[in-house]
Length: 288
Image (cartoon, rainbow, N blue to C red; front, top):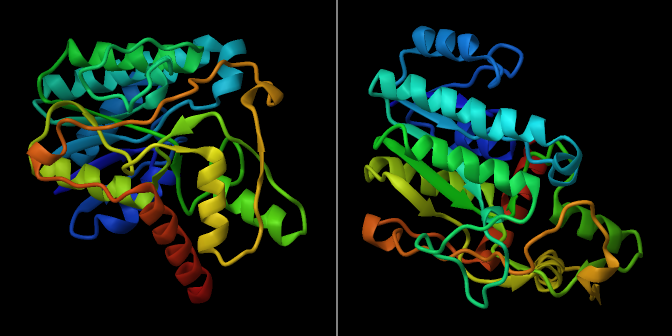
C-alpha cells in the first residue's frame, strides 16, 4: 500500500513509519508540505499518487491553544478539511486522528463512539470541528479517536514522555507528584499504529475509538510504570486542583470502543502498553 503520511515525525507518525514495514510510506517533512498550505498538500498528493492518506499531525499544545485558538483551528480543523476535500475529489481513502478531548469528562464510564461530544477547551473544540468538517465531505474517511498517546519519540510540545519524566524523577531520588483524580486511557503509539493499520485493512470508515483498553488515573498509571521498570518508588497522589493549567481538562476521558471488535481489531490494555513501551525503548537503547 502506498501511503502519504502527514505528521511522520511525531510520536504516532514515527511508529507508523517503523511498523508498517510492508507498505510504501511517503512522509514529507512539515517544511515540504505544511498542513496549512492547500497548494503544498495538493502537490504532495500529485507527487506520491497515494492509495491512502493518513494525517497524524496536529496542533496539540493544549494550554497554548487557549491563547492562540486560531492556530489550533488552522491545523486541526481547516487544514484537515482541505486535505479531506483533496482526497474526496480523488476518491482516496483518508484517515485522521482525533482525541478524547472532544468529550467534557462528566461521564462515569469510558466514552464510546455513540456518546455526544462536548469539548471544554479550545484544543478539543478545534479537533471536533475537524471531525465534523471531514464527516460532511466524504464517506471514505476514517476518524480514529485516541487518548493520552505516548511513544518512543518525545512529544514535540513537551520534549519528554510522561513515563520517562516519572522514571527520571524517581531515579534522581525525587518522589513524583501525580494527579490521582483524572482518569484516561493512556495509549502506546506503537499499539495505536498497529490498530490503525488493521482498521485500514478492515475497510473501517466513520468514527472509531482506538486506545489501550481500560480506565486508569494518571497516578495509578505512573505507579505501574515504576513497578514495571523495577523502581521501588510510590508517587505522591495529588488532586488536579493543585495543578493549575490555562485550559480545562476532562476529569474522565477514558475511551471504549463499540466498533473495534466488530472490525476484527483488538487493543491491548494500558498495562501492556507500558510494558511494550519500556521493552521497545530498552531494545532501541541497546541497539544504539
